[in-house]
Image (cartoon, rainbow, N blue to C red; front, top):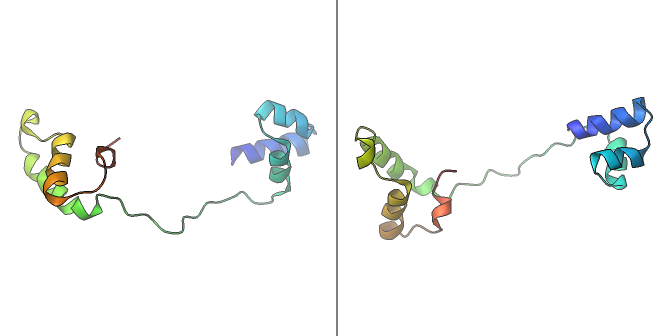
Length: 102
């Protein structure tokens, strides 16, 4: 939204040409013209919140983590071990990337 304010300020107050604004901000002319025509800033509204793939395993994971919380760090399960614990017996769909925390 800052880019829209910058384009409007440069063009309407500083009287810069659209092509010079486009060169400086690395935009196309149609994009700058579109931003100059708008009165309100665009807003994004999500239609529905997607459910995480691990939502059905959340209670199991929370239980495991709670019981292992008091163990020494070396004895706790790693993300890989938690994944393997869920994946094999429960047929969890998806790769490890859906499981690991980024």
